[in-house]
Length: 145
Image (tube, rainbow, N blue to C red):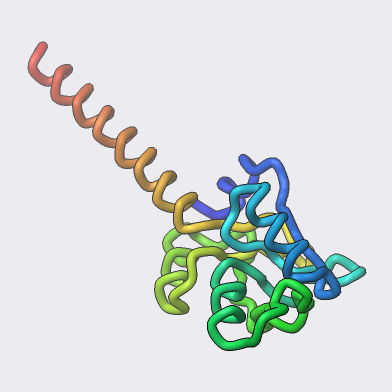
C-alpha cells in the first residue's frame, strides 16, 4: 500500500503561514483537533512544520509572550516528507527513524496531504482484520469439504 491511498481519503490539510502568530496557529491546532500542520509560503510550498511540541518547547525555553511570536520563529524547518508513491512501510520507517508522528506528502513541490502514525496504524489494523476474515473464510470452506 502506498501513502496516496490514505491521502485520497482525507478531506484536506490544515496549514498555516510563517507570519501567523503562535496564538493563531494554536487555535487552528485546537479547533481542528490536530497535533501538527505544515507551514506553507505564499506560493504554497512547504517551508516548515509546526505543532504542539513547538509550542511546549517555546514555553519551556522562553519568557512570557510566546503567543505573540510568529510561527516562523518556532517552526521546524527540516521537514521530513515523502511522495505519494511512498509505501506505507517506508513512511512508518521515516517516522520511526526521525522520531516524528506526521509526514507531509509532497508531489512536485505541492502539498498533497499529511500522513500520521494514527493513519498508518489504522490502515494496518484494517488490513490485518481483512486478512483474518479471509483466513477464517478459508478455514470454514476447508471444513465443508
